[in-house]
Figure 1 (cartoon, rainbow, N blue to C red):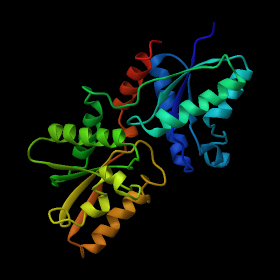
Figure 2 (cartoon, one colour):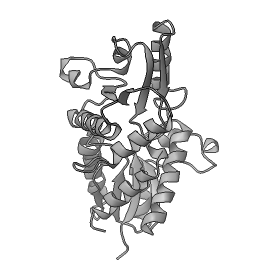
Figure 3 (cartoon, helix red, strand yellow):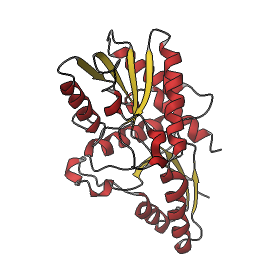
Length: 269
């Protein structure tokens, strides 16, 4: 029996840099575990023009699985490039896999744990290293994630904020926030939004570090992305009194490969 094919799966993006970043991580993970790792997105990335990603088309999960099944591979292990148990992992993906099994009953897909795990502070170590790497005298840190309709994902953000504060020490003030949220009181757990935080007294003047709880560059986290736009608008609103600095992204730190390799090993392979 062939061994399961390992897939490193992100949510997907229309930004070429995200696909290229996913491929880099898959290659590094493959070197670490001694097996091939396929970089495949859950959605979106197949629409990226191939000439913008080194001439090789990006793949998304369902057609990629069907292609491999047709070639005789029926066992797969998905290593999610997700911080926590988002709806993509707990709801959408299981439903799509169930649909695929109606056509391919032999399909067997295991899903490894997401990046954050209780008792594992390595994500916070990455964030702290990125804060320190800025070399800034700033002692206020806004930890920003995308914002999720799943409270369990926001709970991860909040726990990482506590861990990051512990890593940085008592001289730092760390506040969790989100880039965006859904409307309605049911999603108030995403608050505060970064844009609102940077208007508050104590955060709207002086130097503030924006710690990026984002994995890969794209529409939100790229140098001209939504988070950068929010920071620029807050600086303008302050009349020049506020200065922000964004950290590097989590996928730029070598410790992420250690975490991914452990999630792969934790699947029992």
